[in-house]
Length: 181
Image (cartoon, rainbow, N blue to C red; front, side, top):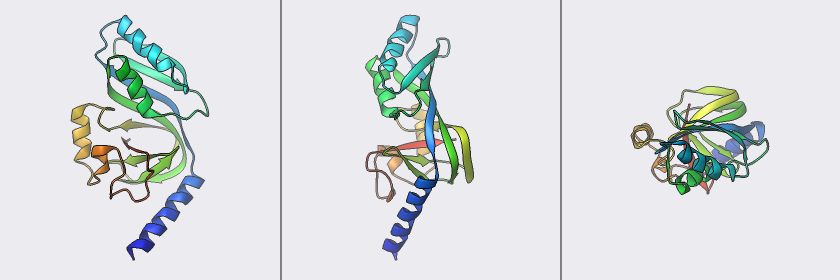
């Protein structure tokens, strides 16, 4: 019985993946530790080396980087974090604009896109259309306080590791990102 349920869930996930469309439009990143324009410049230069970055707008007062994404380019969120950390800073908050077309979600729904899985944490049942801004709540992509809060809002263990666990039968084998709206 469990095998049939898993197979059925896999088929449904594949059907949803075929009938839905999503892509990144922009990423807003608050960077912690920025104190001057030289700091901002080093982060900006590091981020501009990413293939998927079209342009970056910087709000130095808020230490906010708004990364405009090149259309059709694959975005790797961990690459953004790695570039920021490589410049000597940390991600305080990361919010991304995704363009969805008719994706129905519910709490703990797993959505596979570009070899990664996006696990919706603490969301209401809803249908996503157009550009929706999602907040990443993984360790290293938000504050420790926010990560701890969302870890307590799901029983899925993958939120602690970012990797598939027994709870994520249909997930990508690469990376599981935890997001909320």
